[in-house]
Amino acid sequence: MTYTLKPADPYDLTIEDTSYLSEHVDTGDRWVLNFGPQHPATHTTLRLVLELDGERVARVTPHIGYLHSGFEKLGETMDYNQYVTIVSRMDYLGPILSDVCWHLAVEKLFGIDLTPRCKVLRTIMSELARIQNHLLCVGAAALDLGAFTGFLYAFNPREKIHDICDFVSGQRFHSDWTRVGGAMADLPDEAVFKRMVSDFVNDDLPRALDDMEKLVLRNRIFLDRTMGIGVMSKDEAIEWSLSGPLARASGVRRDLRKDEPYLCFADNWDGQGASAVEFKVPVASAGDVYSRFCVRVAEIRESIKIINQLIDNIPGGPIDMFSDGKQVKPPKAEVYGSIEGLIQHFELIMSNRGWTAPVGEVYGCNESANGELGYYIVGDGKARPWRVATRPPSFINYQAMAKMTEGHLLSDVVAILGSINIVAGELDR
Amino acid sequence: MPIADEDILIIDTPGLTLAESVYLPEIVRGLGTTLRHMVTSWGQGKTSRTIQYPEQRREHYDVEKGGQFDDNFRGVHRLNRDDAGRVKCVACMMCPTICPANCIHIVAQESPWDDREKYPQQFEIDELRCIFCGMCEEACPVDAIELTPEYDLVGLTRNEMIFDKEKLLSIYDATIERKPM
Image 1 (tube, chains in turn purple, orange):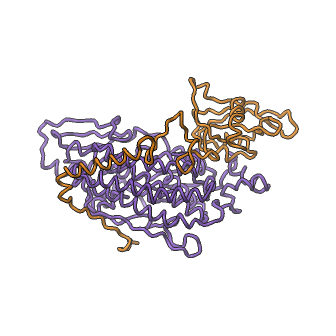
Image 2 (cartoon, rainbow over the protein chains, first blue to last red):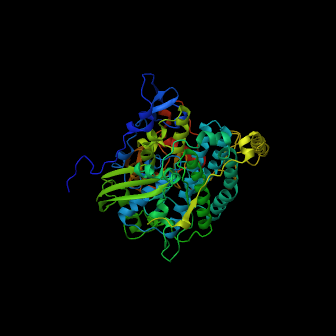
């Protein structure tokens, strides 16, 4: 099949024919305002060039690249375990979600099936990361719109998630906890972990959510600032390939945890007929900024349900999938105790040995807090990937920024930007 | 496969009640929430997350109350000593190989001792480059390099922050009681 540069069925997505521009003729009074790259409301370094008609936004040109760090290229020089340290720095609001997604893609390439214990722990940790991300998004949106108190009440419970990450992996923020076929280490103390997690999700978090809902989501000023702002209809959301809470706020029924289930979201995840975890997918229909925050808060409540289903039934057994597959690092007892373990340990790390990845390409994705996060890996039989590409939800969602903003007031730009929840580390990679 | 209807949670946004749209009673309720938080967090109360560093440190707290878990905390590195007090490292070069940040530099030399062939003549870790991922500890086949619960990492110059073998061994002496090998 030959490829042509022109798509066969082009979407007409030029921003020049929005209704605002056709209704308001340029009289020469427009002025240009640079929003960012250094601006507290952009959260990170991104730049919007706003063409303003008085206080109305006539045209938006989003710029990217201010935080470009060559993350994707680094994937070609690092092996499948090392790259997790880079991946967790992409979406740094909920780093474990990216870790889990990367290693799910790698395990798809290698054809490794995880142990039930590993699946449960990864699910719990990634739901915690989702809560972490959503809390920051909703809290920071309140901050951007002038409600500093709401931000603090959303930020406080995040501290507890950091404590749990610290306990599990040894680092509060960039846990870099997953490894090919397992995790960096098993839980240091399962009972303490269970108590910490269930205390958090059943005690601290619901109270913080109630406070936040009362202070922010039922606040008339917040509602006036966010309702009917940045509306994307269902068809537009699909056309612009939005995913995650943005798409679901517009009425798109898509959640990869249901559509392409992985980990404990899939049926029969433990090999003994366990059914998938039960949760509901929050969907709104308004498609405005306010419904995006409502969807995010509802997702936090669903994540609590997921964690509560799993936390008391963590299966026993090993967390690492150590077998004769030669693709998973052996446990330390094997390294010290047996010659095979020692050889495999050295083989996986030595620079002239390493993994023998299958030749092929794979796309592994999961539902991160902002949408579909995917990693595309091309393996060429060597220890390092030939190419790693990311499908970052922030990047795809950011392109609709211009469409959402046009015709709105300058102060609405901040609200819309906050609702997309762009993470520049992921946006620019 | 489309998501089944019973798995969908429709979020409707109910309109504001009269009290909410008048807004004045809501100010009072909101202030009540703020006051509740003020009272409960007063003097490092229940909802306060403040730690009066450096007088109080996370190590002083229980793990479940937000304290630090010393056993697997990933702080400053140390080089372990063996029973005879010598450096345990055998200069196998696993840690500089696995290090994602390339911050470990080892110069290996023939060992003066009988129990191993090589030992590190120089062992340097650039603590400013390090991302504290703990992979060196995982890679080490003899438990020679470890991360400690120590996190006060300060220096006035960049050169000071490149820790050499003696410095790393002195961290071992300082932390061995808090984190046994």
